[in-house]
Length: 360
Image 1: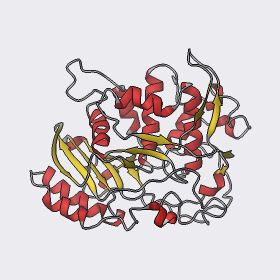
Image 2 (image 1 turned 90 degrees about the vertical axis):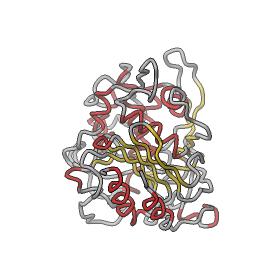
Image 3 (image 1 turned 60 degrees about the horizontal axis):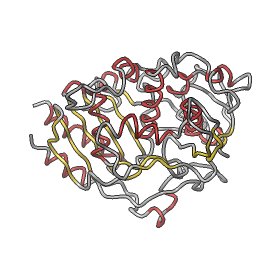
């Protein structure tokens, strides 16, 4: 298959961000509408590569370009990795019921108020929690009234202002502070640093992880109590993205390995023992649309009726991060596509060119 046209299109439309974040810090990790004093970094940012990616079909790599083995920051692709960790906890009995209030298993970390006590794991994983509070110095209000490009809902206020709270489970809003609160809850649920768990459960069995980092904020260190044979220790809670810095650094090819595992229903590709990393039921649940936002699953982007990402099959689902970081899983064509540092305004053009080849 010839993906040259799609690759050349991607390379011609690199995201207009400097490759050195220190030369233009406002572009890396700080949302352009973040109000002061939350418009500055709290975690590390790293120089990035150019447009890179891979295309796999039927488990085979058909195309690669750029530097697909370079580990770069993924921004909100990391949100989906939190959903994978929640799934691994569910499969192991640590999180048996997504409709259970979070406070029942992890009290004392910000879910104890009357309002927050009603919040469930499912609310957090679908971004309908309406959690109220401050997580590592960031108030949830900083991301209220936030608009994201794939949400058709019109924003009726100014980002960072105190939009009136709704009952948990009744309002969808993309909010990174609440995602970081979910990450903190998962850290306490596992009783171990999430990067350590992610490497052990997913990256190592997939033969992935070279250059992998999952970094937090300077102020996100906590004293984690002993749990399930793991000693008490001081660990860093990690964000579900690179908003305010930090987050996951991983290569395009390793992202493809994770996506291929999901496409395989949770089984390691080419495993002679059919080693399973995640239940097929959980992967299906990740793709179940949120009733309040049918374009969103469990920290994943969906494509109902092919409307969110025109050109891609309606069965496609995506991990999406700022800076033009996309992981596209297409069950209809048994394909995985990863592209990095593509100008988001031109992602549709890239999708249509790849889809044209996959559909032949």
